[in-house]
Amino acid sequence: MLTRSKLVIALSAAIWIVPMTRAVAGIDVTAGDWKLDFSGNVNAFYVDTNCDTGTNNSVTGGLACTGDKSAAVRNGLLPAAFVFSATTRQDNLDIGVTIGMYPGINSSAAQGVNGAGQPSALATPGIDARQAFLTFGDASWGTVKMGRDLGLFGKDAILDDMTLLGVGSSTNNAAPGNTSLGRIGLGYIYTDWEPQITYTTPTFSGFSASAGVFQPLDSGLYIKHTSPQFQIGGSYAWGGTGGGLSGKVWVDYVTQQLQAPSGTAGTTGTGSTIAGSFTGNGVDGGVKIGIAGFEGVVYGYSGTGLGTTGLFILATSALGNTRDSDGGYVQASYKFDRLKVGLSYGMSELKQASDERALPATDLLKRNSSVVGGLYYSLTKSLTLVGEYIHTKADAWNGNSATERDVAVGAILFF
Image 1 (cartoon, helix red, strand yellow):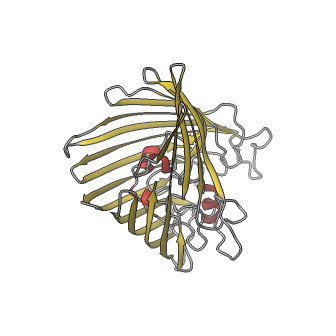
Image 2 (image 1 turned 135 degrees about the vertical axis):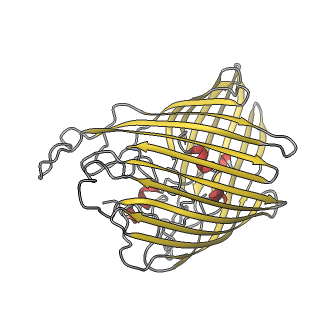
């Protein structure tokens, strides 16, 4: 079974989005025909976590901690980052390359830079190379991207999450890894960094669309892939002037077939048949509105065999029958001069598969939810001071539940 600690380790490709969210434009250098850009961030937070110490608090897939209280100095939802990009125009084509490296400030355990942390003497953090892609295209017909970068499904959900500059749900605070969870698994499924070949249209009067083939992902015993993962997305954005109404709407879709290797699926000792394959599908969408100092976001997703927290995690029962999942979040913030005040609530639900509903309920996750209140103060255009209070709850199908409370204070600097 996938326990909370195993889920955290399996997930930890989880939270890395600096280039699209940096507060300033980076450091630009022109070298011959090429324009070079260096950008990134460094952040650090003090996080105080109170875990559930009661009974009946075991939740498989739950994101609220149990056991002792913990204190840590750690990264937030973003790790530190150093991103290099180079662009030029050759033979009527705009071409470019981007490579991003993401170190955390916390030492890494044996599982690697995306595993649990190792807060002990003589330990060291690692460098996680999450981005490496090329692009080519033209304003008249669009852009092709080839390499490793963010997926389409769930991308806007995390880019518009206010905890991107902070911590959100802390995750494994006693031994912190490169990142916290923010609202991942608590309102959206993580978009992830995936190998891909993606085409994006030009923007026509605010409309744009993308479609791509992606490296298929594993799920439990389903590790055979004879076709790629497919993702598509579309959006419409408009901008107000002089504090007028601005915003965007978007929708995305992901689908992938997952198969068990020959001889893996079959019949159990009880005579039950294990499915040889399943198809995971998911759709999401959202609306973001801004006027004057106010900004609001409403987002939701739904899927079958899609999983929770990460793509295709806990997507099926032990017999390979798919579980439905859905969730979303609402968020509102207002900026008073340099201070932004925000409040958000989100949840991610996982339904039982058809064969599980006929059996006694287990501690399988039913719902992860959280409430986040945050203060974000722009000390300069590059440096933001952050304070957050986070209340996280995990509920299981058998009635078990766990509650976690976090207080986080720190800063993030973009360049």
